[in-house]
Image (tube, rainbow, N blue to C red):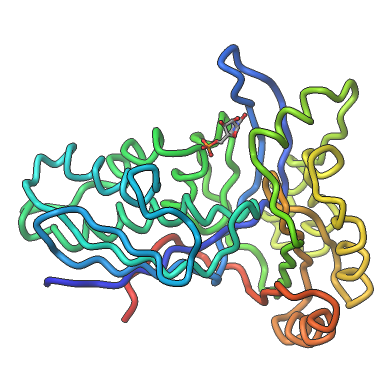
Length: 292
Ligand code: C5P
């Protein structure tokens, strides 16, 4: 095999709580993360050197890009004297809290493991991939695991949960993104922050209780670091029939949960009259996979 294409899911946080601050400034989190059918499309082709192209994206394709960092980590760990030409079709908005960069890193690690399995005469285990992904970014371990997970620590302690009940989602990206460090800094300045019921959400998922999931969903960063458009977007989502609406990650995207994909599609049709960046998606019960 010389070339393959990987679909690497974006995510939303069904819940995000901040439960502590570490001496290095990172935050201890308690979250439930959900992989989405909305995916980054990553094509990997064997090459002698490392190359990255991002068609249609303004992001720099230089050494700071997490997809290249992931490829470098893979070749360094495996000792393979090889390269890869990476093309990332970015379908996920940036500064959205949807883990698009983490999905790129996870997709590259997963894809290289497939592409170079023959040359290595084995595949790296999920534990090895997680260890390679961990230093690249706090959301990369979940981006590798996918599905539905309770995620704790700084994002590196994963516990798989039963799949999210069937539903549809509409995600709306405001005009302006939010920087993750700025969102956490804003949280640190609040004296009595609000905390969502993450344990309640975990319990609802274990019962397959969609109404319970909606009742417990919440994001501690929403009140402090979100974009000025968040309240209006939440209201618009609820008025369009969403059972709950909240910000994902450190923002700025806001999503609503609907009883079915059909309801989400109908709502999106209306919401597109007001908002330009509207995505319809659904829960995905896996992590990155090879496009067939
Ligand atoms: O690891 P990642 O690059 O995703 O994190 C971006 C920034 O978000 C960090 O530099 C830090 O300021 C903040 N962060 C945090 N606690 C976490 C994850 C991220 O404070 N658990």
